[in-house]
Amino acid sequence: VPSGRCVPIAVSDTVTVPGLLGDLSPDELRAQLHRMADWVADYRASLGERAISPSAVPGEIGGRLRAADWEDSTPLEQILRDFDQIVMPGILHWGHPAFLGYFGSTSNGPALLGEIAAAALNVSAMTWKTSPAATEMEATVLDWVRELIGIPDTFFGVVYDTASIATLHALAAAREQAGAEIRRRGLAGRSDLPTHRIYASDQAHSSVEKAAIVLGIGEENVVRIQTDDDFRMDVASLREAIDLDIRAGHRPLAVVATVGTTSTGAVDPVPEIRDLCNSRSIWLHVDAAYGGAFGALEEGRWAIAGMEDADSIVVNPHKWLFVPLDFSALYTRHPEILRSVFSLVPEYLRGDTTTSGVPDYMDYGIQLGRRFRALKAWMVFRSFGRNGIVSRIREHCRLAQVFASWIDADQSFVRAAPVTMGIVCFRYQPDGIEGEEGDALNETIVDAVNAGGRTYLTRSRLNGRVVMRIGLGNVLTTEEHVAKAWQEIRSQSERIGARTSGESSLGLRVAAP
Ligand SMILES: Cc1ncc(COP(=O)(O)O)c(C=O)c1O
Image (tube, rainbow, N blue to C red; front, side, top):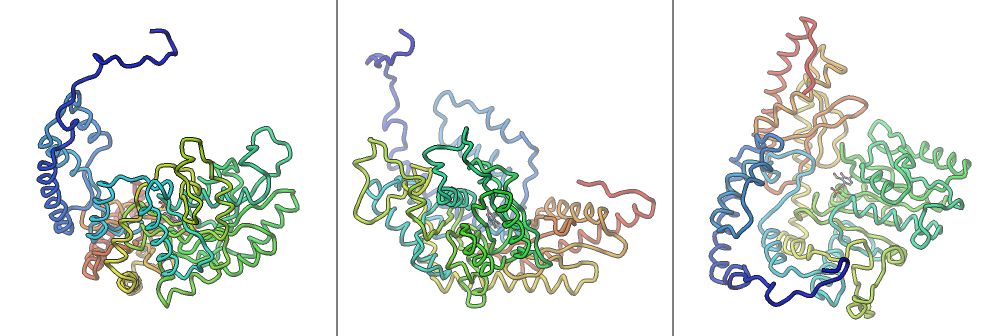
């Protein structure tokens, strides 16, 4: 065979594949789907009784999975048995009603049905022509989320997988707007470019740095602005940082304001940040990945004030609008800029684009192939209804307040941040255990609670100190679950705290986990 040449396949080279080209027959598929439906329903029904955390050791599951022979076809029975015996024991049950870690990413019946149908259809919503219904449903659910939150209809929306990717796209548009023709000319080897700077609070999500890394702006050029006692961006410090940079010849590209920070749900003062951005011609991106949903409540409107004048906004329905992973919505007032960064139509797609006013979503992002994500969102939104969504969010906020009141009533605990949304940060701080010793104690408690399998929480660091954190968002979580979680946290804290005081009096340090 001459090297570097494509060799046409000879007929005799073709292999024989089983009937139906290896797929299940329609009857077998039906039977297996029924079985899987039972499995899914049983799983959902029994979620609350399961141990949340697996006891897996790193590498163990992979080792067992790789040990399987996949040279030839494996009967489905065996594959499902392996799923049950190898995979299931390694699952951290995010959907458990007492899983209070991160944000309560939630699955639910309507979403599951949408996912199944989307998997069966397996269309790619890259252009309107390649999937008219997926494209128009995407536009519809984007409108619904926009209206729910109170974002004006001057904003154009597009769905990505995650907020990290949405922010990356928003900042790429901000970079393009700055006029340095980076799409066309790139960054490398250019002496005409100033240092680009992005500003975000010290509480902003790490996705801002990730975007800066990818966009060639550089991690160091994300300027972290200090926050006030309530973890909100300090606008005077922002102004100072921007003006200092301008005097140094840098180019401020964008400010990322957060509505609902990851650790505490704090809301940056967007109206003041907006005024500052307007006065210096800087792109304002609002990360409302979590907190946008709060704007759906009458009592949450204050949190989205000023967002209507932002250049771009990200909202994650997969955080608090009951759409399972992944589904993130980016809105921008400048779709033409986003499009000017990402639209690139190769010959083999030219016949698939449209000029009739409906979007070809491939023009607004890096991805070409795009899942039919809108279907699960549409099923959830129609099934829950706008009112149902609002009342679920309101209930989560109530549960957070109830939990916070328990913290406040217990002298051994302190609340570490104001509770505005569905997040509560707190610290176990019995008499005499403070500083790093207290940090180690709180970390040990989180690990012990999680290892117990009855509830799950995460930790963060505020004002330099480790805190425990719960995040509400699961449709299945009730006050009873939160109460049991609190009991568990308390009893583990007391148990470990007592041990720690004993060790401390002997001069021993609590070992960090
Ligand atoms: C405020 C905020 N922004 C962005 C993100 C990133 O979200 P994603 O996982 O969708 O990239 C998070 C995740 O927790 C977040 O809390």
